[in-house]
Each structure stands twice: as structure tokens, then as C-alpha cells.
Image 1: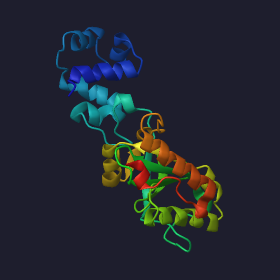
Image 2: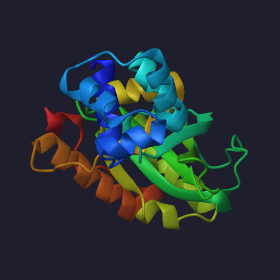
Image 3: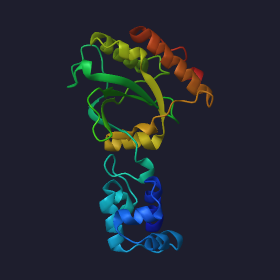
Image 4: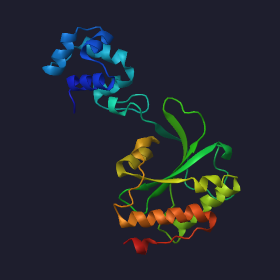
Length: 238
């Protein structure tokens, strides 16, 4: 874990301040900042308090080394956007009336494939409500879908397409995206109901043959919608 002196230096560098400018911002001499950074001196409590008061978004991280997104961040994550779940459903199908959000407020559909597991597929529907303090509100579809299934997982995907068509949002099928996410970030999503947008990565199709086949199936779903049939099933991905 970084020391207080290392953390203060990171804050100064991220905020693009010279040592003299940083000192003026918090009301301490330049030589105090030099001593903290060059000699590793432990900053006095009043100096830490001044840094926290000047940049409150880093205060929790400065003291504890942890973050609590989106309000308590570390300097290297200061520009991130958080996708926060405010509605959670297991699946959406024709006739489903489980959502409070009106279909005209649906913004973008992002499918999330875990990077180390071919079966785990989830989806976030971003809403077009104004982004607030780096937060995008989303609907989370959390179970049952599977891009390599020729059974219930396939049917859940067809149900979702039928639902979007029924609600007049067929446009979201063709504009949907597939992202790859690490196991730890998926666990964070389930535990905290939010995930950093930067954790969702565009898949590198050159890395794994199974991923390329999954993406082929995803493209087929975008083109065929409620008539979707996978080009590859789980037997092809072994």
C-alpha cells in the first residue's frame, strides 16, 4: 500500500501542480512538500487535513487507501464513469411488465461476457436520464442468457429481442454492444450494484478462438433478433 507521502505526491501530479503551487493551495511552505516527497517524511496531521479539505474527493482514499465510487475516488480514477444499477431483473420477455423505466428512456444495451467463462452473460440497459456526478443509471439483466447455448440460454436472448421489438425499441438490438469483463469486476457489480464503465472492455478477438465464435453468435443475434440461432454451440467452443 502507498505511504501518505506517496499518496500526496500522486495527488499533486494528477492535479498538475508544482510543489510550490501545491503548497500554496493548502497553505504550507514548499520546503515542507519537498521534505515529504524527497525524504519520505510522514506528513503532519494538519497537513493531511488540509489536503483532504482542498480535494475532498480524494480524502477517503488518502486516509484509508480505499475508494467508494463515485464520490470517493483515487487520483488515478478521477475521470471514471460509474454504471449504477437501479432496476434489477432476471430476464425480460414479451408481455413482461417488471420495469418501472419506460422503454423510451432506454439508451443503450451492453452485454457483459466474463473473460474467463463462456457461459456467464449479463446485460446492462443504460437509460437516457441525465448523468449525475459521473453516474449512469442502468437496468441489470442478471441471469439465463448464453451466447453458446442452443437451449434456454438462446431462448432468453430471443425473449429479450422480442421484448425490445414489442416495446418499439428494435433499434437497440442492432446498436447493442458486447463487452468483456474480469471476474472481480463482475463480483463487484453483484455486491455493490455498480461497476466502473472502464471495466467493460471491447473484446480482442485475436486472443482466443472461443471469444471469436461467441462474437459471431452475438453478431447473429443483432441481425436476427427474435429469430436468432447460434452459429456455434458450446460443443464448438471446447
